Image 1 (cartoon, rainbow, N blue to C red):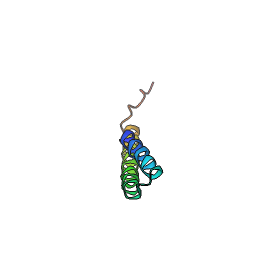
Image 2: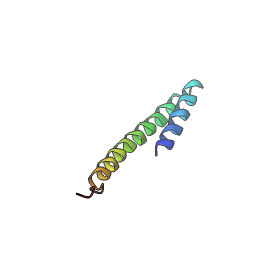
Image 3: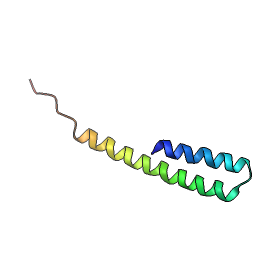
Length: 59
């Protein structure tokens, strides 16, 4: 997901350089949405990983 966010961000930068404002705005919006979805999923997986971590044996 982060890969696609970076791809859309690069496409929006290239479109902005060449003057395609509508395409640049659309692709940057898609990149933002994908990035925030990635962050949310990363935080959820981090929390679930901390909860499900095996407990060390008590000696």
